[in-house]
Image 1 (cartoon, helix red, strand yellow):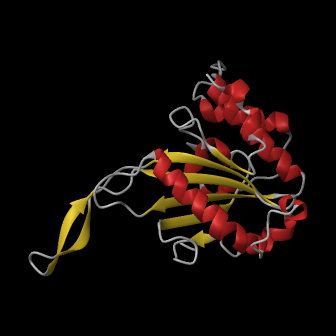
Image 2: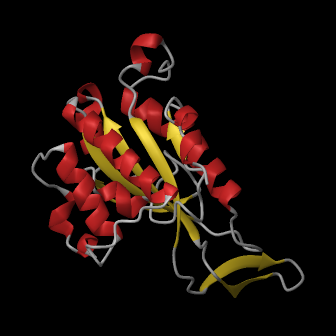
Length: 224
C-alpha cells in the first residue's frame, strides 16, 4: 500500500479530479475495477471535502490515538468514542483554541474540521499489575490490549496552525494534561489522500464522529 511510504503524508497541490483518481487507485489494485460501493463513495467524498478545506488555506493533520486497556474487558466502539469526545472537547480544543470559550460564533469559525474514525489493531498480551488484598502483595496477569483505536483527520485553521504544529510527533498527547485514557499518540501533517487510510474500516464502523457536526447531518445519502 502507498501508505507504507512516509514521504506520501505530504504531496503537492492537485486538482480534485486527480485526487478522486488517486482515491480510486488506492481502493483497487486492479485499475480496471471501478465499481464503487456507497461506502467507498463516502470515503472519496470525505477526502474531497478535506481537499476543499486545504484549498481554503487550512492545514491537514493525521492524529492516531490508542487507549490504555481495561483490566477486565476490551473497549467497545462506544467506549473509545466517549474517551475521544471527552479528550477532544474538554482538553484538546481548549488547548488548540487557547481558550475554553470556543463555542462563540467567532471561535466556531476557526475550530478545526475533524473526522474521527475507529480502527482495529492486533492484540498482544501485556502484564497488568494490581494489588491483591488477600496476599497483601502486587500481582500481574496478562491482558490483551485494546483492539480499537482512532484515526483522526483535522483541517486546522491558519489562526491555530502553529499550536497544532507544536503537537506534531509521538506521544505529545499521552499525558494527563490531555487525557488519562490515552496510551499512545502520533500526529503528522498530511494531505487529503491520507483520509482513505484513516477511514479504511468505515464499512465496519460507519458512524464516524465529526466536529463540528454539520457534515454528519448531510451523510444520510451514503448509508447502505
